[in-house]
Length: 152
Image 1: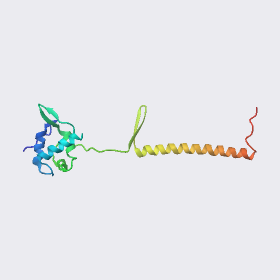
Image 2: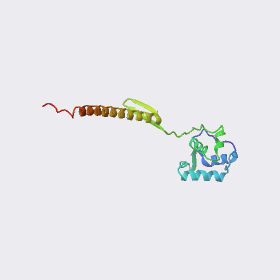
Image 3: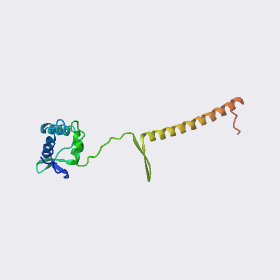
């Protein structure tokens, strides 16, 4: 069976399934298993519903193969040169952003945490200096017999 025209945006689901079943490069690539995996993943919301074109279910080619290449047993699809460019999707965690009017900065979560810790450290140092100054003043007043009365 010749390869489908992957340059199209949508292809009939049956055409893609039939083509995948002829590959034999991966484990469960028989027609029934392919249909079942597509159906199950649609039920779980991992894969969107088929687009109906003239009463026939069609798959968005790029979206389908991005999904299919991540499925267990179908990883070999990544090695087929005719498939559309498959984007690598990487989950990123630990990213934070800060901004001002007219300016936006991006930093990692670690950078944001460091800034938070630096600000907290600065506050604690200021609090400690005020407390030490107040303690020193109280000590001086204690040596003098108490806080002096304010003149009236």
